[in-house]
Image 1 (tube, helix red, strand yellow):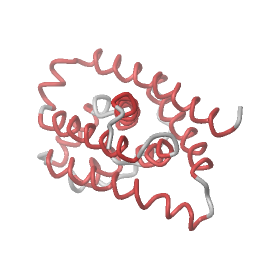
Image 2 (cartoon, rainbow, N blue to C red; image 1 turned 30 degrees about the vertical axis):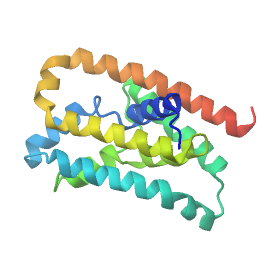
Image 3 (tube, rainbow, N blue to C red; image 1 turned 90 degrees about the vertical axis):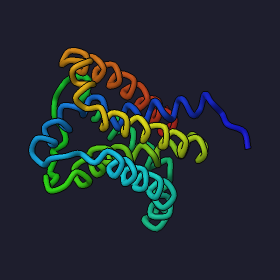
Image 4 (cartoon, rainbow, N blue to C red; image 1 turned 180 degrees about the vertical axis):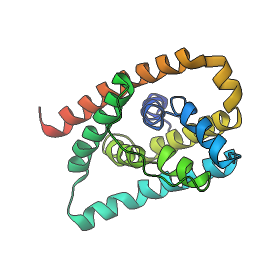
Amino acid sequence: MTFDYVEILKVSMVLFAVIDIIGSIPVILSLKESIGEVHAFKVSWVSAAIMIVFLFVGQTILEILGVSIGDFAIAGSFVLFFIALEMVLGIKIYRNETPQSSTVVPLAFPLIAGTGTLTTLLSIRAEYSLMSIVIGVLLNIVIVYVVLRNLKRLENLLGAGGIAILKKVFGVILLALAIKLFRKYSGL
């Protein structure tokens, strides 16, 4: 088994942009104030489990529904496009309807392993190897864990301006990836 480090890096960057853990720091901090302690290990582990299970079972679900990976990739490109627009333009397209009852529910799902992340996993599955995707998921979960463990330090280090800049930069990268996915599977 050989590792394609470039492919792993690409997958990791796509997932990093979609998960947007750095851009989510303000949301996570406000959740922490309202629901108490954030259990970094538990949230990270549950997020990883959701993503990996969906990576393997998601295609079967699509087959039952009669949807191809290419169709799902095009649909995923639209989701990625709108997420990127939110990040770049600072607008809210998706409504967050999560209950604020525990750190696992609003953080692991849908904030970290939400619809954008799950759609991305199946979309990139059409382009990258499963091994690269699993490694990319695990690398991102390590980053999520580190961020959750160091929320206050990161907030102080980056400041509001730094967080806003990171969000815009990763939004533009995500926008380009959404367009690439759409062009690849739409035949344009």
